[in-house]
Image 1 (tube, one colour):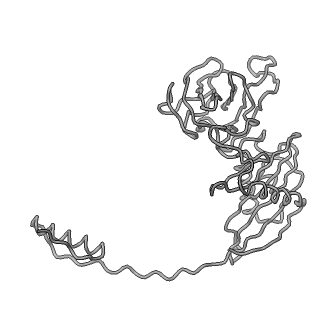
Image 2 (cartoon, one colour):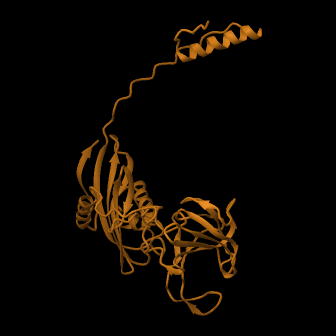
Image 3 (cartoon, rainbow, N blue to C red):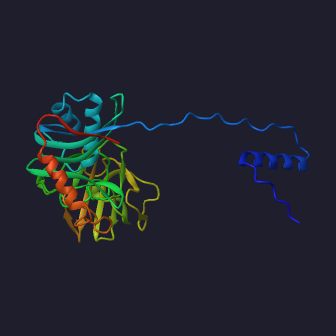
Length: 330
Protein backbone atom coordinates (compact mmCIF):
# COMPACT_ATOMS: atom_id res chain seq x y z
CA UNK A 1 0.00 0.00 0.00
CA UNK A 2 1.43 3.36 -1.00
CA UNK A 3 0.98 6.63 0.90
CA UNK A 4 1.20 9.92 -0.97
CA UNK A 5 2.35 13.13 0.70
CA UNK A 6 -0.08 16.06 0.47
CA UNK A 7 0.63 18.64 -2.24
CA UNK A 8 2.65 20.99 -0.02
CA UNK A 9 4.67 23.85 -1.51
CA UNK A 10 8.12 22.65 -2.58
CA UNK A 11 10.21 24.14 0.33
CA UNK A 12 7.76 22.76 2.92
CA UNK A 13 7.60 19.34 1.26
CA UNK A 14 11.42 19.19 1.14
CA UNK A 15 11.60 20.04 4.85
CA UNK A 16 9.01 17.35 5.77
CA UNK A 17 11.00 14.75 3.80
CA UNK A 18 14.16 15.85 5.61
CA UNK A 19 12.48 15.51 9.04
CA UNK A 20 11.10 12.06 8.17
CA UNK A 21 14.55 10.96 7.01
CA UNK A 22 16.06 12.22 10.26
CA UNK A 23 13.54 10.24 12.32
CA UNK A 24 14.41 7.05 10.42
CA UNK A 25 18.15 7.60 10.91
CA UNK A 26 17.76 8.66 14.53
CA UNK A 27 19.18 12.11 13.90
CA UNK A 28 16.03 14.19 14.12
CA UNK A 29 16.21 17.64 15.67
CA UNK A 30 13.44 20.22 16.00
CA UNK A 31 13.42 22.62 13.05
CA UNK A 32 11.44 25.65 12.04
CA UNK A 33 10.02 26.37 8.62
CA UNK A 34 11.88 29.14 6.79
CA UNK A 35 10.17 32.52 6.92
CA UNK A 36 8.12 33.74 3.98
CA UNK A 37 10.34 35.61 1.50
CA UNK A 38 9.75 39.36 1.52
CA UNK A 39 7.41 40.62 -1.16
CA UNK A 40 9.22 42.57 -3.84
CA UNK A 41 7.73 45.85 -5.02
CA UNK A 42 5.82 45.75 -8.28
CA UNK A 43 7.88 46.50 -11.40
CA UNK A 44 6.44 49.14 -13.71
CA UNK A 45 7.39 49.66 -17.34
CA UNK A 46 9.53 52.70 -18.11
CA UNK A 47 9.30 54.34 -21.51
CA UNK A 48 12.51 54.51 -23.54
CA UNK A 49 12.97 57.15 -26.21
CA UNK A 50 14.56 55.86 -29.40
CA UNK A 51 16.16 58.32 -31.82
CA UNK A 52 17.67 57.59 -35.21
CA UNK A 53 20.83 59.60 -35.79
CA UNK A 54 22.85 60.09 -38.94
CA UNK A 55 26.40 61.34 -39.13
CA UNK A 56 29.19 61.36 -41.64
CA UNK A 57 32.22 63.12 -42.97
CA UNK A 58 35.75 62.81 -44.32
CA UNK A 59 38.16 61.71 -41.63
CA UNK A 60 40.94 59.25 -40.80
CA UNK A 61 42.20 56.72 -38.28
CA UNK A 62 40.23 54.05 -36.45
CA UNK A 63 36.44 54.14 -36.35
CA UNK A 64 36.57 55.30 -32.76
CA UNK A 65 38.91 58.17 -33.71
CA UNK A 66 36.73 59.02 -36.73
CA UNK A 67 33.57 59.28 -34.62
CA UNK A 68 35.40 61.42 -32.08
CA UNK A 69 36.28 63.86 -34.87
CA UNK A 70 33.05 64.11 -36.86
CA UNK A 71 30.63 63.94 -33.91
CA UNK A 72 32.18 66.21 -31.32
CA UNK A 73 28.78 67.35 -30.00
CA UNK A 74 27.87 63.83 -28.85
CA UNK A 75 28.82 62.67 -25.37
CA UNK A 76 32.17 60.86 -25.02
CA UNK A 77 30.35 57.69 -23.97
CA UNK A 78 28.09 57.73 -27.04
CA UNK A 79 30.99 58.42 -29.41
CA UNK A 80 32.92 55.53 -27.90
CA UNK A 81 29.96 53.15 -28.19
CA UNK A 82 29.31 53.99 -31.85
CA UNK A 83 33.01 53.68 -32.70
CA UNK A 84 33.34 50.33 -30.95
CA UNK A 85 30.17 49.09 -32.65
CA UNK A 86 31.62 49.96 -36.06
CA UNK A 87 34.87 48.17 -35.19
CA UNK A 88 32.84 45.01 -34.53
CA UNK A 89 30.61 45.41 -37.60
CA UNK A 90 33.48 45.71 -40.08
CA UNK A 91 35.83 43.45 -38.11
CA UNK A 92 39.14 42.88 -39.90
CA UNK A 93 37.83 43.70 -43.38
CA UNK A 94 39.55 47.07 -43.67
CA UNK A 95 43.30 47.41 -43.97
CA UNK A 96 44.57 49.01 -40.79
CA UNK A 97 41.24 48.34 -39.05
CA UNK A 98 39.66 51.67 -39.99
CA UNK A 99 39.76 54.56 -42.47
CA UNK A 100 43.54 54.78 -42.71
CA UNK A 101 45.02 58.14 -43.69
CA UNK A 102 41.84 59.37 -45.32
CA UNK A 103 38.34 58.06 -45.94
CA UNK A 104 34.65 58.89 -45.93
CA UNK A 105 32.33 57.52 -43.29
CA UNK A 106 28.53 57.56 -43.20
CA UNK A 107 26.55 56.01 -40.35
CA UNK A 108 22.89 55.70 -39.35
CA UNK A 109 22.24 54.33 -35.89
CA UNK A 110 19.60 54.00 -33.20
CA UNK A 111 20.12 55.48 -29.75
CA UNK A 112 17.90 54.41 -26.83
CA UNK A 113 17.63 56.96 -23.99
CA UNK A 114 16.23 56.46 -20.50
CA UNK A 115 13.75 59.00 -19.06
CA UNK A 116 16.59 60.74 -17.21
CA UNK A 117 18.41 61.32 -20.50
CA UNK A 118 21.14 58.74 -19.93
CA UNK A 119 21.96 56.42 -22.81
CA UNK A 120 20.86 52.80 -22.58
CA UNK A 121 22.11 51.34 -25.86
CA UNK A 122 23.32 52.02 -29.39
CA UNK A 123 22.71 49.94 -32.52
CA UNK A 124 24.20 50.68 -35.93
CA UNK A 125 21.51 50.34 -38.63
CA UNK A 126 23.67 51.03 -41.68
CA UNK A 127 27.23 52.15 -42.34
CA UNK A 128 29.37 52.96 -45.34
CA UNK A 129 33.15 53.38 -45.38
CA UNK A 130 34.96 54.54 -48.53
CA UNK A 131 38.65 53.69 -48.15
CA UNK A 132 41.38 53.37 -50.75
CA UNK A 133 39.00 53.40 -53.70
CA UNK A 134 36.80 50.64 -52.26
CA UNK A 135 33.34 51.01 -50.76
CA UNK A 136 32.45 48.88 -47.73
CA UNK A 137 28.82 48.73 -46.59
CA UNK A 138 26.99 47.14 -43.69
CA UNK A 139 23.24 46.79 -43.19
CA UNK A 140 21.50 45.49 -40.07
CA UNK A 141 18.93 42.78 -40.84
CA UNK A 142 17.21 39.98 -38.92
CA UNK A 143 17.20 36.73 -40.86
CA UNK A 144 14.86 34.10 -39.41
CA UNK A 145 14.90 36.03 -36.16
CA UNK A 146 18.72 36.12 -36.00
CA UNK A 147 20.18 39.66 -36.11
CA UNK A 148 23.28 40.26 -38.20
CA UNK A 149 25.08 42.58 -40.61
CA UNK A 150 25.22 42.13 -44.39
CA UNK A 151 26.94 43.89 -47.28
CA UNK A 152 25.21 45.31 -50.37
CA UNK A 153 25.20 41.82 -51.94
CA UNK A 154 23.47 40.25 -48.95
CA UNK A 155 26.61 38.48 -47.71
CA UNK A 156 27.06 38.12 -43.96
CA UNK A 157 29.72 40.32 -42.37
CA UNK A 158 29.89 38.47 -39.05
CA UNK A 159 31.99 35.51 -37.95
CA UNK A 160 30.32 33.31 -40.59
CA UNK A 161 32.56 34.88 -43.22
CA UNK A 162 36.14 34.02 -44.18
CA UNK A 163 37.38 37.51 -43.41
CA UNK A 164 39.11 37.21 -40.04
CA UNK A 165 40.23 34.46 -37.65
CA UNK A 166 40.96 37.10 -34.99
CA UNK A 167 38.63 39.44 -33.12
CA UNK A 168 39.02 43.13 -34.08
CA UNK A 169 42.58 42.69 -35.39
CA UNK A 170 44.44 45.20 -37.56
CA UNK A 171 45.48 44.18 -41.09
CA UNK A 172 49.21 44.87 -41.38
CA UNK A 173 49.64 43.50 -44.90
CA UNK A 174 46.76 42.82 -47.34
CA UNK A 175 46.43 40.08 -49.94
CA UNK A 176 48.07 40.16 -53.36
CA UNK A 177 50.25 43.21 -53.06
CA UNK A 178 53.71 42.73 -54.58
CA UNK A 179 55.78 43.61 -51.59
CA UNK A 180 59.39 43.48 -50.57
CA UNK A 181 59.68 40.53 -48.23
CA UNK A 182 61.21 41.83 -44.99
CA UNK A 183 63.47 38.78 -44.59
CA UNK A 184 64.03 37.43 -48.12
CA UNK A 185 64.70 40.97 -49.45
CA UNK A 186 62.94 40.39 -52.76
CA UNK A 187 59.56 41.33 -54.22
CA UNK A 188 57.09 38.45 -54.09
CA UNK A 189 53.26 38.19 -54.16
CA UNK A 190 51.54 38.04 -50.79
CA UNK A 191 49.25 35.00 -50.86
CA UNK A 192 47.39 35.79 -47.64
CA UNK A 193 46.46 38.49 -45.17
CA UNK A 194 48.65 39.42 -42.21
CA UNK A 195 46.99 40.46 -38.96
CA UNK A 196 49.06 42.33 -36.38
CA UNK A 197 48.22 41.06 -32.90
CA UNK A 198 49.98 40.61 -29.56
CA UNK A 199 51.89 37.39 -28.89
CA UNK A 200 49.50 34.76 -27.52
CA UNK A 201 46.28 36.15 -29.05
CA UNK A 202 43.83 33.24 -29.65
CA UNK A 203 43.39 32.20 -33.30
CA UNK A 204 40.06 30.62 -34.30
CA UNK A 205 39.01 28.66 -37.37
CA UNK A 206 36.81 30.62 -39.78
CA UNK A 207 34.59 27.74 -40.90
CA UNK A 208 33.61 24.14 -40.16
CA UNK A 209 36.22 21.66 -41.36
CA UNK A 210 38.88 19.03 -40.68
CA UNK A 211 42.54 19.62 -39.80
CA UNK A 212 44.77 18.27 -42.59
CA UNK A 213 48.12 19.31 -41.10
CA UNK A 214 49.39 20.91 -37.89
CA UNK A 215 52.98 21.64 -36.94
CA UNK A 216 56.17 23.21 -38.29
CA UNK A 217 56.02 24.07 -41.99
CA UNK A 218 59.24 25.82 -43.00
CA UNK A 219 58.80 29.55 -43.57
CA UNK A 220 55.21 29.33 -42.30
CA UNK A 221 56.53 28.32 -38.89
CA UNK A 222 53.94 26.53 -36.78
CA UNK A 223 50.92 26.28 -39.07
CA UNK A 224 47.48 24.69 -39.12
CA UNK A 225 45.75 23.81 -42.40
CA UNK A 226 42.00 23.10 -42.44
CA UNK A 227 39.93 21.57 -45.25
CA UNK A 228 36.35 22.88 -45.43
CA UNK A 229 33.31 21.06 -46.92
CA UNK A 230 32.79 23.88 -49.43
CA UNK A 231 36.11 23.04 -51.13
CA UNK A 232 38.09 25.85 -49.54
CA UNK A 233 41.25 25.36 -47.49
CA UNK A 234 42.49 27.79 -44.85
CA UNK A 235 45.97 28.19 -43.37
CA UNK A 236 46.98 29.84 -40.09
CA UNK A 237 50.73 30.47 -39.85
CA UNK A 238 53.51 31.78 -37.57
CA UNK A 239 51.70 30.46 -34.49
CA UNK A 240 53.51 30.40 -31.16
CA UNK A 241 51.85 27.09 -30.26
CA UNK A 242 48.91 24.88 -31.16
CA UNK A 243 45.64 24.72 -29.28
CA UNK A 244 44.85 21.66 -27.16
CA UNK A 245 44.06 18.61 -29.28
CA UNK A 246 44.80 20.27 -32.64
CA UNK A 247 46.15 17.50 -34.89
CA UNK A 248 45.42 15.97 -38.32
CA UNK A 249 41.87 14.57 -38.70
CA UNK A 250 40.53 16.72 -35.85
CA UNK A 251 36.98 17.83 -36.73
CA UNK A 252 36.36 21.54 -36.06
CA UNK A 253 33.39 23.84 -35.81
CA UNK A 254 33.59 27.49 -36.79
CA UNK A 255 35.13 29.48 -33.94
CA UNK A 256 37.08 26.59 -32.39
CA UNK A 257 40.51 27.48 -31.02
CA UNK A 258 43.41 26.53 -33.31
CA UNK A 259 46.40 28.10 -31.59
CA UNK A 260 47.98 31.37 -30.56
CA UNK A 261 49.64 34.25 -32.42
CA UNK A 262 53.43 34.08 -32.53
CA UNK A 263 56.39 34.74 -34.82
CA UNK A 264 57.70 31.30 -35.75
CA UNK A 265 59.14 30.75 -39.24
CA UNK A 266 59.96 33.76 -41.44
CA UNK A 267 58.51 36.54 -39.32
CA UNK A 268 59.93 39.78 -37.96
CA UNK A 269 57.29 40.24 -35.25
CA UNK A 270 54.20 38.60 -33.76
CA UNK A 271 51.38 38.36 -36.29
CA UNK A 272 49.06 35.87 -37.96
CA UNK A 273 49.47 35.01 -41.65
CA UNK A 274 46.07 33.78 -42.84
CA UNK A 275 45.43 32.16 -46.24
CA UNK A 276 42.29 31.05 -48.05
CA UNK A 277 42.73 28.67 -50.99
CA UNK A 278 40.37 27.24 -53.58
CA UNK A 279 41.64 24.17 -55.46
CA UNK A 280 45.16 25.08 -54.38
CA UNK A 281 44.94 28.68 -55.64
CA UNK A 282 45.22 31.51 -53.12
CA UNK A 283 42.22 33.87 -53.04
CA UNK A 284 41.59 37.10 -51.14
CA UNK A 285 39.70 36.31 -47.89
CA UNK A 286 38.42 39.90 -47.81
CA UNK A 287 36.60 39.43 -51.14
CA UNK A 288 35.55 35.80 -50.85
CA UNK A 289 32.36 36.61 -48.93
CA UNK A 290 30.96 33.84 -46.77
CA UNK A 291 31.40 30.09 -46.70
CA UNK A 292 28.69 28.88 -49.12
CA UNK A 293 28.44 25.70 -47.08
CA UNK A 294 27.51 27.54 -43.91
CA UNK A 295 25.93 30.89 -44.79
CA UNK A 296 23.83 31.71 -47.86
CA UNK A 297 23.63 35.28 -49.18
CA UNK A 298 20.25 36.88 -48.51
CA UNK A 299 19.27 37.20 -52.16
CA UNK A 300 15.49 37.63 -52.22
CA UNK A 301 14.90 36.56 -48.60
CA UNK A 302 11.58 38.00 -47.48
CA UNK A 303 11.97 41.56 -46.27
CA UNK A 304 15.62 41.99 -47.29
CA UNK A 305 15.19 43.94 -50.58
CA UNK A 306 12.82 46.45 -48.97
CA UNK A 307 14.95 46.85 -45.85
CA UNK A 308 18.13 47.30 -47.89
CA UNK A 309 16.41 49.99 -49.98
CA UNK A 310 15.18 51.76 -46.85
CA UNK A 311 18.60 51.75 -45.19
CA UNK A 312 20.33 52.80 -48.41
CA UNK A 313 17.97 55.78 -48.66
CA UNK A 314 18.71 56.58 -45.02
CA UNK A 315 22.45 56.62 -45.69
CA UNK A 316 21.95 58.87 -48.72
CA UNK A 317 20.52 61.52 -46.40
CA UNK A 318 23.51 61.38 -44.08
CA UNK A 319 25.02 64.87 -43.64
CA UNK A 320 28.51 65.77 -42.47
CA UNK A 321 27.08 66.89 -39.13
CA UNK A 322 24.99 65.07 -36.56
CA UNK A 323 21.27 65.06 -37.34
CA UNK A 324 18.50 63.60 -35.15
CA UNK A 325 15.00 62.80 -36.34
CA UNK A 326 11.99 60.51 -35.94
CA UNK A 327 11.84 60.21 -32.15
CA UNK A 328 9.75 57.33 -30.87
CA UNK A 329 9.16 55.42 -27.65
CA UNK A 330 9.13 51.75 -26.86
